[in-house]
Image: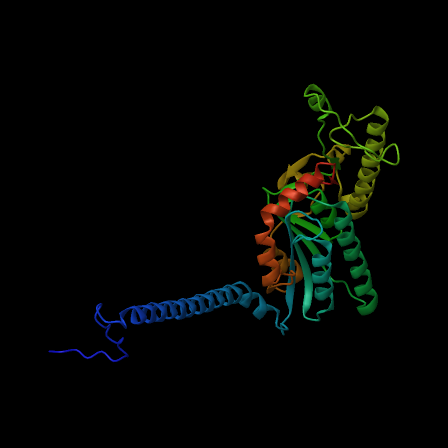
Length: 334
């Protein structure tokens, strides 16, 4: 049995004794090099195509279910907006993202109620304030335009603390699991003091400022008593704003003394006894039993594929850079 393979066969090499042998060898080597280059390009194109298919598959898997849910739901439903992680600019729980989702939910006729599903240790009081005030504004506008109430419920999962709780008190009611952590009503600012350490190493700190207090909270300079008093006054002022928001949101439901404003936090069961929350429940139970629209539709503003990829690619570098800047004393309510 003989096998026939189709394809061009290389021309036979002349004998080494032939004067054409060197030229034939050079030609053969050049042809082989060209074939290798073509083969490499083909494999490169194939790999790039497979990578593209893989990225498209990831995109479809990540967003198809969410996109289907967002295509103009025709039946009555409860809108769910996740507030997850640190509340700060450029995060998933930034004011821009949450407010965009809130406005969409309030404008959709099929939405019969809104659930803010909160799982956050806190963050920026400014971002939390934006979200809190927008909830209040949208509720008032909805009532004025449609002569009806749009129920807004906050549902705490693992943690609803500090800036997360700041947002929650704008809701009609706050629901928790018995093991949720709730509270931490306070303001903090963090920094370090290395002035004695560099002095012991014989290092001279050279910080030039225009304004005698411009270098306040510099970790390599001592903190004079008058600057400490000033910073504490600012924190007390912000703390007072936080307390005022909580008192306005909870009203007579708050059944506790000043200890709830000390920065401590409690379990869901304890928070219920203190009047910090209203009931035990989940997003599903609230939608079913209180809103009356059991179907849940996620209105959370998601990151697009490019944004998600960029964020993950630069996460380590960005986190280190932010931490380096934050050492100067970034303040937050968490």
